[in-house]
Length: 255
Ligand SMILES: O=C(O)CCC(=O)CC(=O)O
Image (spheres, rainbow, N blue to C red):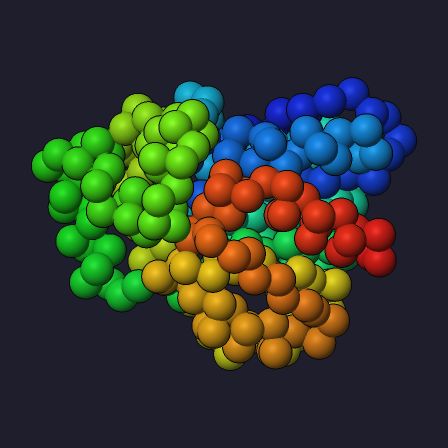
């Protein structure tokens, strides 16, 4: 399947970094971090189906493997054969899938706020039913509690509310299609096969992808490190872009 991938800058010949968004966020989720890398890298923002750009196909039953394969082929059409991938949450899962299924395409992987399996079939069925009934705007209160550390939304009255506004505006069917893909996603027990240099990033207060759980993931990947961002929950690239940039820049200097 075709994945929407857009250049953030025009830096031909530089190493390529591709950013991937979290469920219910726009492709611009990583913009504050990506902009800081734009002098030295060619940056692309990739989009979950229908999250920023109109859906390029109407398939409702894709998997994260389909998204990973689609990203590789969509980048190849742009002349990109090798890249470092930075994915958040579901896109961290796409990143782990890329490292398992397409290792030759990857120079490095940044897997942020992610897991080898998210929730259960029951929790996803419940969330899908809620979105069918109330739309993504019905998710706002619960999601704000998961995405941001206590106090963030009142301390930074620009970034957090902007991301939540994006959530309310995202196409319900696109959100549900990705939620269905997450229901099937499970790479538990497979990470030892990953040889790509990998940086895991966890928010210290992420209630789902906890630092402890992500430390266990990092322990399974041979060439990996983990960074824990203080005072952050599920979206540390929004809460503390400077800190996340520092971790990624340090990682990139070694891959
Ligand atoms: O955020 C994702 O990409 C998937 C996992 C999830 O739904 C976590 C959340 O919204 O809090």
